[in-house]
Length: 394
Ligand code: FSX
Ligand code: SF4
Ligand code: F3S
View (tube, rainbow, N blue to C red):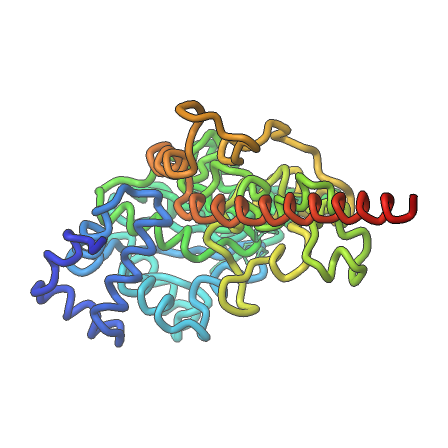
């Protein structure tokens, strides 16, 4: 069914102007906005509100700090190979300070930071990439003569919101791996207050973009969990929506890289996949540059739990994951559906949307349902084949 709300924007000049700014067609612009509304788990029709906000709202000033990290967050967010995404992110924010992207250097760039903080006092968003070394007075990371601890406190004081981007700033990430010689800590630990966290090493750019777009559209940051993670992105385990889940449930595993199970796309649990203990939406919205619709597990590599404190960079890559949720997913179909009882696939998908589960789950469930049925069919055919050959032998 056509989306009436998007159709109502057909003659909206601001939409045309936004599309022209981004060098894309208005159709592509609306598709992007619909994708963001979907990522946010917003109800049908919210895509029009998102499109209007992106096209017309004043861009918030962003001051972006870099501490202990690899700059992968910036690289994944502003990927040069994806000019549309890069343009869109730079279109929804006003990036007033960013050490690695600024052409200026030294005193000039320091002056730009101070000016932006003065001009947008109490209104700017502080985005922090990288962990903060806290040992020995913080001497292991200094910028412009100030330690990361000093800079963070200085910039956070007048910020309207603080977003920790990537696992390093969210919970310490790779720099905090034992024995953590520099005392690498998270933004929340140093500021001693909750901040919005977008973990991932690197984080999925759509999760950052969708967080900012939520702020633009509704004037507030999205709902977060106890770790500050936006619920739209981090409330389900990778394992819950994984395309290999049917193989897990049927007990079909790759045992070695390159073995038959691996080549057939079986579950990577026994190769150390941390999907069962990692909260993120990679299996739903996909994440990776290896081709369309891919993400680490789809490429054949176990999830290493890069978003999850205590898992990523902590547990050996090939150690088996702890099962956090051993209950079968409510979205998995019953083998025999009793009439009038139980959730149908359609209602499960609606429930997922209402519950704010990452959108796309319905599609993934449908895909899993197909795989489950295929698996059952294969199993049945195999058994029937065995029976037939047994009776022939007798
Ligand atoms: Fe790197 Fe960012 Fe990892 Fe950390 O991402 S991709 S080390 S999360 O802070 O630059
Ligand atoms: Fe997917 Fe990993 Fe779970 Fe297997 S263990 S179903 S590969 S998330
Ligand atoms: Fe990270 Fe696992 Fe996603 S390794 S990118 S959380 S699939």
